[in-house]
Image 1: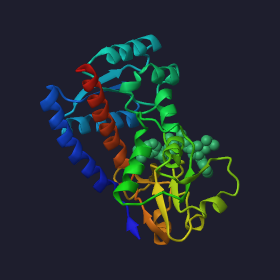
Image 2: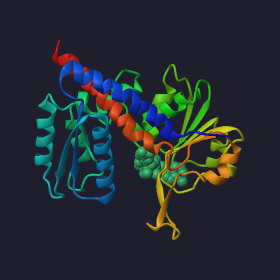
Image 3: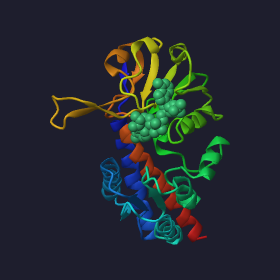
Image 4: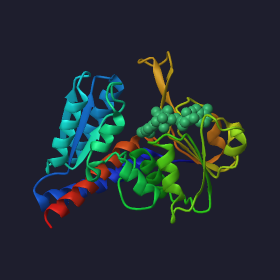
Length: 294
Ligand code: NAP
């Protein structure tokens, strides 16, 4: 059984981005730059935003931090996005989700310029992904692909079962894997799926993204399958100083012995998401800088 270590893959991505960033700065005289907007002070969101800032700083990317109060109006938020859309020194714009309830997240996402939508959430980017055209792709499924590629795990003609149909993980994951060239046969399951175990047992590759701690048990997997665990869940653990530990959607301890390969939590898919955000920002910067100099 092989452990698919996201950390190792992310390190390679960062190495390559570091050199791309140096070349970019030398050529254009400014760094690829990411603007991150946080509305309110949700602790989890603050920590995600901090992680993105750290990644920018360590790579030498530019970073703009906009921390807005939780009662920020829709108009003020959209105005900031419009300003950043027009700012040629900003290449990627990310609005940290979830937003406070009075703000329209769909409208916010649609306001971000498609070429700067490094989260890959804009409907035009989502549509491009579905029809197999270039565009930005949601970072977590992109991270899963990167792990599969790094460890030479082909999806071609394999039955991939995805647990979860969210717009940021399950659906883009399915879209990526069903494309020509990837050639997986994809089944998506959700909370209304019946006889789940019968379906998951058929999976050559099982991708779990449901947000239910340790939900996937050994009874649900086929002997020799590949398991990708996207879930990140906190469970109480009195033995830890902070009172909890992180686990995935898969019961790693009991499932791993039956797998050909499996991602751990933490240290699996989670570390790939920010790496892919940086990769998307690099790509946005290259495309926008090339356009500007044409
Ligand atoms: P989400 O928006 O809550 O979606 C969960 C999906 O799982 C829904 O489609 C839901 O079905 C389905 N589901 C829930 N219980 C199920 C069950 N018992 N059987 C089958 N399907 C079930 O979650 P998400 O944002 O996609 O995130 C999923 C997990 O991935 C979470 O643990 C999250 O923390 C983690 N995550 C990790 C990263 C990362 O960086 N690694 C990034 C994003 C998310 P319905 O549609 O029917 O409700």
